[in-house]
Image 1 (cartoon, rainbow, N blue to C red):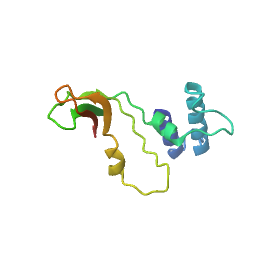
Image 2 (tube, helix red, strand yellow):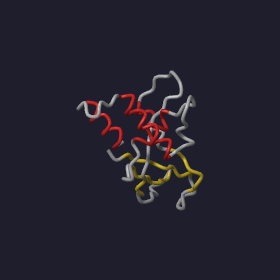
Image 3 (cartoon, rainbow, N blue to C red):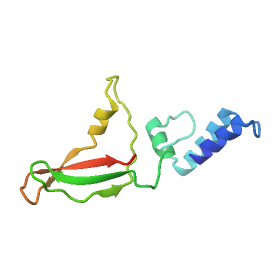
Length: 127
């Protein structure tokens, strides 16, 4: 993200006569150098979702996850995760972000140690 911000700043301040295309090319070269398979050169395309994931990557824990029983009060402690979330709509259906985020809850194959019912994993985003 830093090279992108630096390039935009140079463009806006008219430093080094840099164009937005120059900023794009610099970013493309850096991405390809670090991740050549994900960001090929030439006419081959790259995933916009993959680009967003790389640009907004952070080492800071951005979510917590917990496992809880679907029937009784059994619940495990929250565990911090570095969850990178890029919402990518695959169809023309118009769904709310809230509906997508609801999918952060899912059932696991584990059973509750107290009542043997299915457990579900909940993820909580830290905003």
